[in-house]
Image 1 (cartoon, chains in turn blue, red):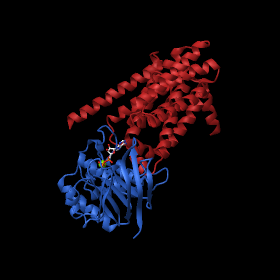
Image 2 (spheres, chains in turn red, purple):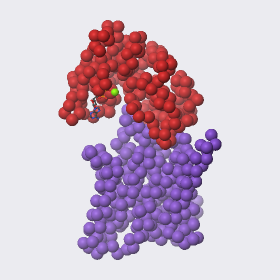
Image 3 (tube, chains in turn purple, blue):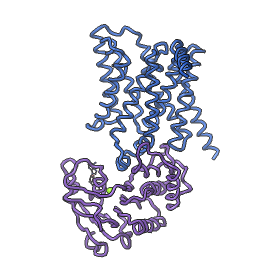
Image 4 (cartoon, protein in one colour):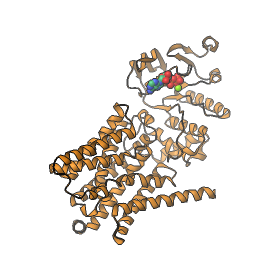
Length: 224
Length: 277
Ligand SMILES: Nc1ncnc2c1ncn2[C@@H]1O[C@H](COP(=O)(O)OP(=O)(O)O)[C@@H](O)[C@H]1O
Ligand SMILES: [Mg+2]
């Protein structure tokens, strides 16, 4: 198995205050890592650093894959007035690997519709995203993250706005992506019940790494 | 073909209405394209800010005897970049950064002018536009600008869309958001400087804002917003220009009022549609 992501002694501070201290861990191709930890533990900051969104940090971040899918943690939803259809939003997920002028082709359109179908939102394809419910919007952003069948998928609390029924389906989908495409998954979650049968690893952070290893060996009671 | 172009240019350079119409339409195209990105990025007031800067630069150009158009293009572009840098490097954001740079430029321009000869040309021409003022140079520059803006928007359309919807995600998919922001700023500067010739300093930001806001009333997607804004923008320039000649009203103000009426029309259309469903 090959290493896809290596973090060495990562320290991130905002205003001289350490948010993340000396974090090191490696992720291998096909790993499905549940990232957990209390609010404000630095989970979002960690993955933003991985995604190259944080310009200043100490330590090393190396990754060896280019196609990354990302579902951000949204504390707000798209404004009602923003003019973008569901299809247009999902098409953004295809731009990373395209050269300018980054044109969306007919086969891209098919791929977009396939993804929407997978997430049961094909009927919303031509609706304005801002007029959808929070859960629907979250599925659209999930579609944007996976439309490119990325080699690494990074999800930041994706289940927060999903209803219980779709949540189950969603975990199934992640499992399938992980197994069928060997997709590496980093999944920040506060949904501890989801830990019972998804993923092979757990990363528990609270500024520092509290636990990193196999999911089976992780016992919640020891840590929470 | 060559002959036709020659006859066309001859007719247009000798007729100020045709010249104004051509420049107006080209500016309308550019401002509606850029307006969609600026309005949705909540940066619409940059149009107003840069127009103020442009006013300041004209004062400076007149005093030093430089070409107003060239001076404005250079200095306004610099100012637009300064606004971006203020945004990035300091705690001064959006509207505050725009306000700072705009008022400083006006003050500086006025100070320099008052120490020397003061303004010798009619201020109102620059405040409200004067289509008689449109020179051949303006016209050639508008043609060039609209070609540049159109090609840039066509090539970078999806990148601009990504940037407008979610700047963070745009970075994640590998777009150089800084460069894209600079590109939009410079193109906006050029559009503002040329647009001032038609509608003036005080009204130019309406060309950036109105078409997009009007289009938003009935559009669903991003592409359709740009298309509708384009049509609204060009339509109001053409109607405004001819109407102002027929009823002998100030051109710039007439164009803006028509933009306003179109907005109300589209707004009512939306309300009616909602009531029906
Ligand atoms: N841009 C920022 N500037 C200053 N502090 C920040 C910034 N982003 C996050 N923080 C702080 O860093 C800490 C960790 O935040 P975050 O990574 O979002 O935690 P989590 O995702 O684990 O809930 C919080 O205390 C938060 O206030
Ligand atoms: Mg978080």
